[in-house]
Image 1 (cartoon, rainbow, N blue to C red):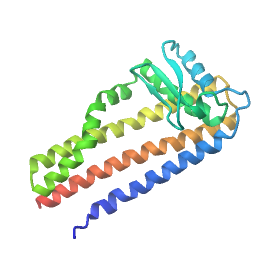
Image 2 (cartoon, rainbow, N blue to C red):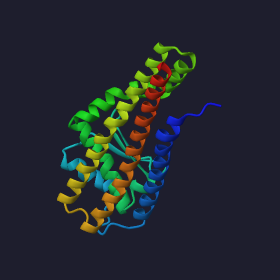
Image 3 (tube, helix red, strand yellow):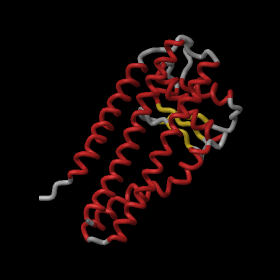
Image 4 (cartoon, helix red, strand yellow):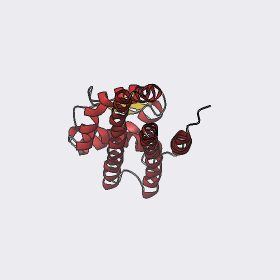
Length: 227
């Protein structure tokens, strides 16, 4: 019976971390969704404020079904806010809306890491879906070309995950600066927004770590086979 030591040591801890991060973001969002903002600003209002501060007039804001389905679509130039965010006046709603608007601001200003991440999307899609399977097939058949190709493709996906981190952190930072400078929220409310955004950031950190550890596992397995 084959025992994958590297999977147990490298990958399983990141799976656990990802699970815990998902629990944390859901619980934090749920907690601060119940706390209304003192000035009754909604997620839509926050998004409009941030875009107005950056002279962005060509991005539409529209509601989208679901929870935590918020996203900015750069191709359609649409900011889509979920039902618990779009028309709700809560700390969580303002935080999430402001963060997603941060991506619209990045797009308008052609923020370097965002531009790079966008160009890597096709590579990431192919690499994440096909790369590991090619690498495993190469290992099973002792076919080095297939193994190396799989690792290379998956490496492109890992690069995408790594570049995602500064993109997400920067979006949150931009949002917090504008909310603070315009006195939109009280200090206590800003503290709550930070907690919501920090919890969300942990999910991206966990995803990046998981991708890195999976890539390291494949590299170590390939070296072990060659020895």
